[in-house]
Image (cartoon, rainbow, N blue to C red; front, side, top):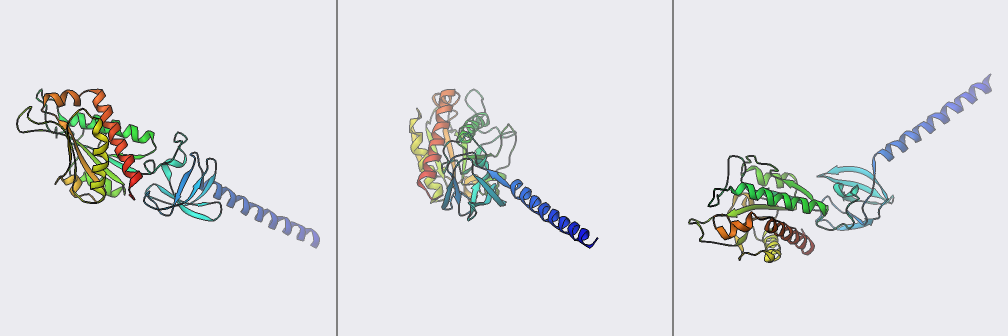
Length: 281
């Protein structure tokens, strides 16, 4: 009888130990991710600005420790602890991870809702075209893996003060506000301008995008200081682009054309890619 009790005790202890291991294994497995992109960067902190500690091949599993600002703190190969961009980990469509694909970019279509912005000579509102261009840029950035946040994605009123806060709250790496200029008299001005308020990264961002916009069939008015709230009260690299004069017929003919909108969007994406490739941001 004593031997039977000892055997039962041993069996119960063994079952309990096995159950504990199973629970731990399930917990560890469920709190892990499988990498679906190739050469995923593990960085020393939760942003593209941190140094790369290791690169992970497609198919590898990473143990999740915590999350912050859409970045995941992981353990790789049982020894390397670092951070990966959560939106890239399970995105099989991204073939090559770049600094642009690891970035968070806020796009700000100017005006919206009750605020029409400037008007063309025929009465077309600026707000319509800022949204068209911003959506195109968003689509092209997302196809490269970039995390994109828009201050508005439809025709709605958004306060000026809330726009830079979107970028600050998201710990974004860049903020781009889209506008179309207007002169005091119709048909008296033409061209595009990239504005910055803060020297340093913001000015670098303006220069990078301005350089790539040379493809546009309008005069390049260069980069310039601009005292605009959305870039002035912004803690991340921020610029405002005036993509042509809406009340100049020559410019507006281009602004409303799909070819111009596509080229404009392509140039902004190319400028962002160059900025992240060449800067520490």
